Amino acid sequence: MSCVIDAIVGKILDPIFDFLFTSIGRQIGYLVKYKEKEVNDLKGVRDRVQAAVNRARDNGMTIEKDAEKWLVEVLQSLMTLEEELNNSLQDKANLKCLDVCSRYRLGKKGKEMVMEAIRLKEDRNKFGDEVAHPTPLKDIWYTSSTGYENFDSRKLVFEEIMKALSDDKNSKIRIYGMPGVGKTTMVKEVGKQAGKGPFDEVAMAVFSQNPDLKTIQGKLADCLNLKLDKESEEGRAGQLYNRLKNGKKILIVFDDVWDDQITLEKIVIPADIVNSMGCKILLTSRRQEVCNRMGFEKSFPIGLLSAPEAWHLFKRMVGDFIEVDPEIQSIAKQICRECDHLPLAICAVGGALSGEKDKHVWNDAVEQLKHCQGYKIDGVEEKVYSCIEWSYRYLKQADVQSCFLHCSLFLEDSEISIGSLVYLGVGMKFLESTDTTSMKKARDRTHVMVGILKKSSLLLEGGKEHMFKMHDVVRDVAISIASKPPNLFLVKDGVGVWPDKDEYKSCRIIFIVASSNVRKLPDQLDCQGLRTLVLRCTDHEFLELPNSFFEGMEKLEVLVLRKMKLAASSLSNLASLRMLSLEDCELVNPSFLNELKNLEILIIGQIYKSKEMVFEK
Image (tube, rainbow, N blue to C red; front, top):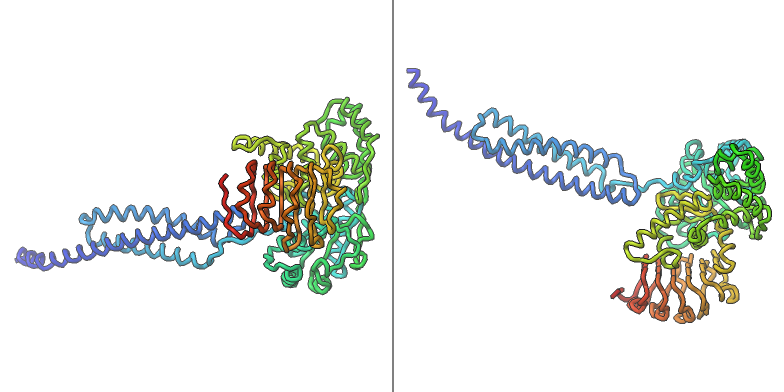
């Protein structure tokens, strides 16, 4: 009887089980395909986010923490999901060998995987399209203060400045002292410490002798992570104003201010921002009388180093070996005294003599420094001049000397890239040719030369890799040296009136930054010996170059233009031109550039043109 019942039950249940096996198997098949689709979709989303993150990192941006966290979580989950997906594909192939319970567990696990992939895709939407934000630049401008020496003669002043900044009664503070005494180094260290303490943010801009307000506005905006999209100075000032009144305590540092007629309004910092909204001004100047109209509550002079401090700094630059040999030590102390306790002079001379153990060199150095006559430059002490000039003369290789002088052809207080110097060097022939192999050699040589000049303290570290700077006083000396034969440079920053012909007619190299006051250029420059011309305009409007401007410049080899409007046909007679750089220029009939048969280097920034540019070369 039981056998009969089993047979009857079996006949009833077999179709049911067949149906369940078939139905569950079909559902598992669909689920595996859906799971595979969701995992691949998640990979696609991951790849897009990772690509955006890579682009942001290449642009120096900071990745958002939730984006980074999501990528890490996806990476970990995908490892598990892909492993389980492979197992699911295998289980699907072996489906007939599985019982109902095993198939159920497989389906449940597959559903969990699908839900995990969907959850991760939905989490992607939580941080929107922005995976990164601009990296704050406030930490970059004081990178050169990492080697700050807290000498006793500076310690008290530093503490008094920090105390004054913490006092709500003081909103405007001034530091002054002769060039080369260490004001910029001091103020960078102040900014560094202030950013860690009483202030939420610190912004810094360098004024220099010929300040450009738009450039200053741009530097402040960079430090404050503010994007300025207005063209006029007034519009950009309004954007800065709105940024500064956000309730944060902000220290604004203005370095190397010359103009004694300057006002807060002129530098786009309205009085109400300073007086009532937590914003404070810290200013440095070479002259005590500068900016008296701004009403500073506190002023601090930076003096010379004491004799022991000067000797300590000189030893640090040269090496402790100078105290081992009594004869070299005696000469070294004489040379240190010749530097007049000025940090910049000590660093220039000490850097040049770093590691030098030949007594003849030391004897020659002290004699040259004793009899070196400093050339008078406005704002530069004669002793500083003579020490920097001696350090330049001491450079043993001619191309390194040439590299030093050519670094003066970049804007004052600007960060200079190795790449820009390479192109300039090749174009001006103080570096070798331009084929692929020799360009690499030129870049390598440039790195070496810049390294030598940094070691001699004639160049400074930049805020980023492959960038460097030239101290404004060192640049002034370099310009003065380069203006004399055989170099014959003419370097003019922020000129309001075009130079007289007698000033430039014999020059080999001309670098001019024209201010907004220059509205018209001469019809013809007529400078037959000119080899290099760098012409930049600081105004937001283009400065038009007359068609005949380049006549008489047949020997011109390097031409660098910024914010100029010109017809490319006006360049057609420049048969010797090897390098052409056009940045933010308006170019008419650009196809005429094909006529420049000797052109080897063409650098084009933003160009406004009336016809499509076609290059056959």
